[in-house]
Each structure stands twice: as structure tokens, then as C-alpha cells.
Length: 200
Ligand code: NKO
Image (cartoon, rainbow, N blue to C red; front, side, top):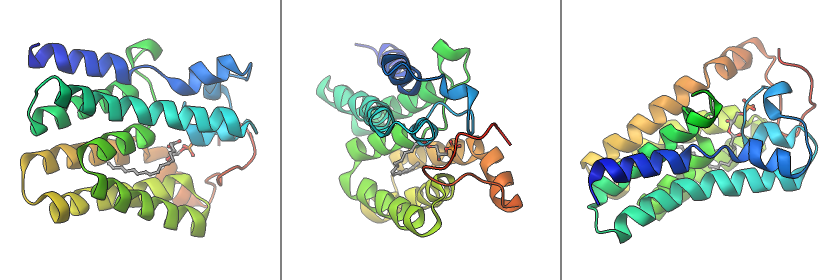
């Protein structure tokens, strides 16, 4: 299999929007129509359905993990496998199935990290949990974990090209949270498990 075919396959896998798929399965409203309007686990939780939110998180996470794992199994190098992870992440964010307007990439990035290096994933997940529990802001937790990712990469993987792949993922993730950053600064950001209030 060529690298191009691998990246295309990973992109298509990443493009599956689990927030939309699970919402349809559970007969819930489209998450793009309430809360932050984001097709992601945090926003699906605002529907009040914890099962749908958990399934969104697992699905979005697994596709990132699977892209890297499959690439390694197919004999691609660790750097090529991390690029497959980046392709799945970009598939989630710029999904072909939602006119290139997908999610923010947090759960998918976690799946990619878990497959690239377990220690990096655990450190970032701990940062997410610490900030989420203290602030109750999913976005602030994701922004902190993304900032930690390249640092954790350097610590556990050393200076190698796949750390740049993690940094690129973190950069796109932070950029996708621009509206959240504005709401955090204005004090109007919604908390975890908060209401379904219309978009601010
Ligand atoms: O609706 O705009 P919103 O308030 O929903 O949502 C903001 C939120 C969007 O993300 C999600 C996914 C939630 C996943 C939660 C578990 C994540 C745990 C660990 C994350 C590690 C991320 C590392 C990134 C490295 C590049 O933010």
C-alpha cells in the first residue's frame, strides 16, 4: 500500500462524525443545533444523554487510535504511522461528510496519542482531567492538554519528527477552539454537563 492510499484511508476513517452518528442512533437533536454547536462529546453531553456522549467520545477516540495502529500493522514506519494519525485527526476536523466543517479534534487527538506513545497520552489525559475537574471547562482542559502534548512528546520521544506531527495537531486543535477562547475570556463559556442554551 502506498503512503498516499494510507493517508487517504486514514482521512476517510477520521471523517466519520460520531457525534452525529450517535445522536441519530439515540434519536437526539443534531448537536450542531444546540449548545456550542460543535459535533463533539462535550456538546452531545449537553443533550443530557450521557450514553450518547460516551459513545461519541469512544468512537472519535478509536478512529484516531485505529489509523495509527493499522499503519504500523501494514508495515509503515513510526513517522508514517503518526502521519496517518494526523490524517485521521484532520478528517475529523475537516470532514468530507459535513462539508469540511467537523469537530475540534480533542477525542481523536487522544486516540492518536494513545497509539503513538502511551506515556504521552496518559500525561495529556491527566492534564485534561486536572483542568476539567478544577474549572469544569472542557475547552480549557483541551487547550491545556494540547499545550502539554509537544512538551510530553519531547520528554518521552526525544527530538524526532513525530513530535512535530503532535505539535501540528495541537496547533490545529487550539485554532479550532478560537470561539471557546473568546467565550472563556468573556466569562460566557459553558461548563461540562451544562445546559443546552442556544449558541452565545
Ligand atoms: O462544545 O465547544 P465545546 O464546549 O468535545 O467543546 C469543547 C471541547 C471539544 O472536545 C470534545 C471532546 C471531549 C473529549 C474529552 C476527553 C479528552 C481527554 C484527553 C485529551 C487529550 C488531548 C490531547 C491533545 C493533543 C494534541 O474541547
